[in-house]
Length: 353
Image (cartoon, rainbow, N blue to C red):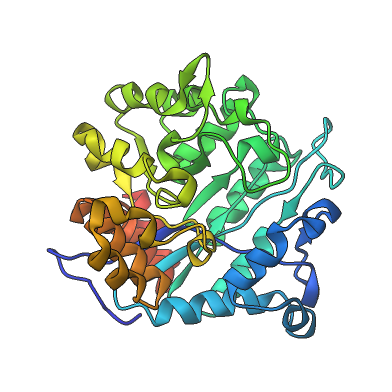
């Protein structure tokens, strides 16, 4: 991997929150529900990934991940990204239930494709109610997953369910962080948003799992209280709680980043993420922050062509402290670099010691 930023003073920048998707082309195993295919978001996401539906049918879903790698390679600021799988919904017997699944991006697909590129890492997704969830967790670890990703409100996962205790224990033993959506979800046609209440993360936190609350719970309410207000005191209670700043420059969240940054006590828990491909849509633009940046600065940032470079520059201009961008490298960098170098035996030895 080309070293763009890798010094002790300016560590590697890793985007820990980058999505992939597919329509099942090229035997990827991906799935999109008929409702999502008819939804206006489908065409928007294709364009954001830099592909057309015809191209994907012809060349397969792997093209999506290829385009992500190519775009990232042209960034002068961001070195690498964790590409996230998304497991399907499962039924009461722990079997896949595609009648309730809107999007499925298999671990096998993401794992296979990211290995082709030295700037991408594998982010696994395992529904903890699967009959073989613990086996899948071990498999993800063996296949060098950087983390486990959940979207509880869409996958129908209750993080507070005591039946997940053994799953959490194994996550902690393996050292796999949990990146989980917090706050309301609006990118899918339906969502059970009570499941993304940050208070529901107390069980994995109590059991020692490193939890990364995506979006810092900046959308929605639970228990008559803003989700953001619910998560704030949890940072002082749990040293293993982090959050990513993905999506916080979207048009529907223009006030949220400023609100997060006012709370300096959590700055050392923030990690860099983008929520790609949303970053490459009209939902994100420096022009939405003219009142803060001024017209000239906003238009200057708007001219930055690479989406990752524009995102870093915009977030820095809005006041995100520099250490936030390199924190994932500081926290997880040794492991990720070993994964990237395919030196898995060295990682096992490090863990054993």
